Length: 249
Image 1 (cartoon, rainbow, N blue to C red):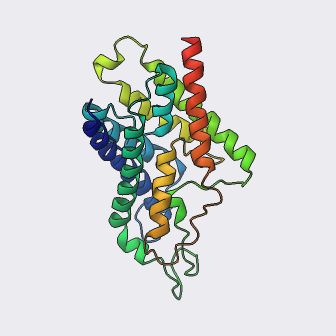
Image 2 (cartoon, rainbow, N blue to C red):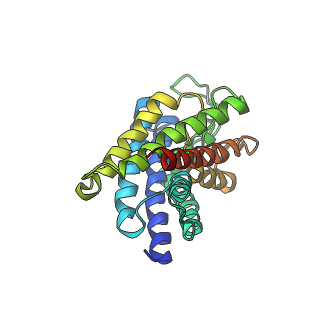
Image 3 (cartoon, one colour):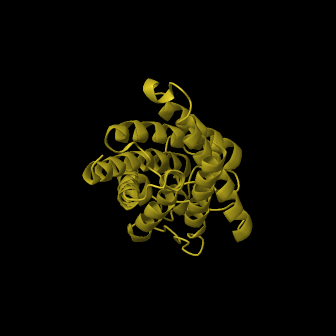
């Protein structure tokens, strides 16, 4: 794969991933959305379908890694670091693009995020916090616990992803991406409660940057004090998964 193919593939694939993921968060969170308050299960499946669409689209060009933690885990396992920077640049750029696209899809809902005389949903016109559409927010802010959650959840993603490569027939059948998508849904349902399961530094950092600069009414803080955890935790988890896989398989 050429550097150009890798970059383009990761940009497109990650943009699709974030379009679906931020899109489902916007659908569930924002006032005047038909899917408002439809719940965590909807969010988990929305992210899983985002992985499905993004990875299948990017696979012919870049292999569809779409996640710096996955890229790091593969590099730690194989010792091949030469193209890691291309993957990371494509993933961050794609995540930012996907966040902008999700914003445009829900532009009217974001613009309606203003104080009004009252609403029919009992919120008395208070603006809806918007950072959760773009990035993760811990339910209980505890840096150590939050970091541990992200590390473990990312190992639970990257280690199976690496192991799938040893399963005869998966690659040839093309079903690997589908299984990874279901894995992401499972992680969301089982491990996503404490932090919102970033498990992907690009997924959190790129959209958080976009949230900082978008002209969203009453958008609230971008919470940069927390931002290091959904970056460091998945990177540590990805590296650990690569080490464990290399040692055990």
